[in-house]
Length: 447
Image (cartoon, rainbow, N blue to C red; front, side, top):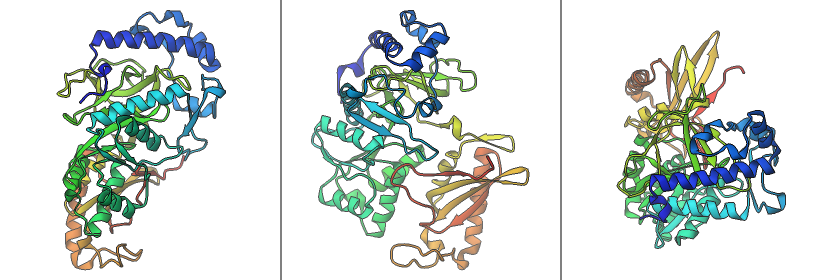
């Protein structure tokens, strides 16, 4: 099911829409934003120079530090009186990145989220349990706006309250979920302890995003809940969720709403624009926003684009599932790898849970990697109630078995990433759970 006709536009029609919006956006920021006027003047580019989509390459990149350096409002192009809503990133490493929306931007956000939810199989007769966090985080309200536009019955429960989440799934007959994949796995973990069989509920689909997750995680979620799991992508800097989403039919790439968000793939080292099909860093421009349009924003996400026909009938360009981030790339003893690669290995092992944490330390002059992974309950002493006390230890009687698990995981991780890591098995509940983005990587090396 397609939400509107733009999703099935011909390539020439789409490019015509994109060029018109590019020309309007460049003229708008040049006139309204001193930051962009200065950058464009320094590069010798005027708004009238954008005569074709190929001219986009002449425009400057925008990076995250530009938003931090202009905190809070200096990258807004709209007048302050026209901004009707603020959102911001978590700001865990200093000042948050602030995003401002005009009424038109809220309408754009609502429309692209309606497209995404429809693409993922959410319809008017669905009960949508929205588990993304409300507040400054864009996930909650973005999904809410889209759900209301589609006509679904939205449950605005937000994150946390795991047992209440399960109760509402049962009592309200939830059919669709919007949630991070790691928190959904946590809900399953708690529900199993409560004796809940999620496959007997009315759940049909889950729209999962806000963090990196693998095909192996998708398989586990679909098996645990008896649903179809669709990936959604977005980032606060561009608008929030709604930039792209998988379709319920194919689930083999995310359709980008490219009439609103112009995508490019670049070589992250040189900035060169790469051809369709090549893997590199995703660059996005929100060419329909008023509050804070960004020219060629470097997302740091690694993916590729495809124009292959899709079974759902949409002609929108697809981005493949993310493989990592350029700023998460680790170089350990000359070997490049992304911490997220560990997930695809861990989730295949029946003796451990999907909960893991990659920790990097510097020992002398060498960088060492430890991967902490939770084992299943049979390898620990008896829990107290439904939680494990801090003194819980791996069972001595299963010492030989746990040694074999460590040996197997160590071998498999080395086969995939090319280095030997220290694998440490820990009891269930040891690795912190998150209601938002799961923290899978800690770098303790001296800065």
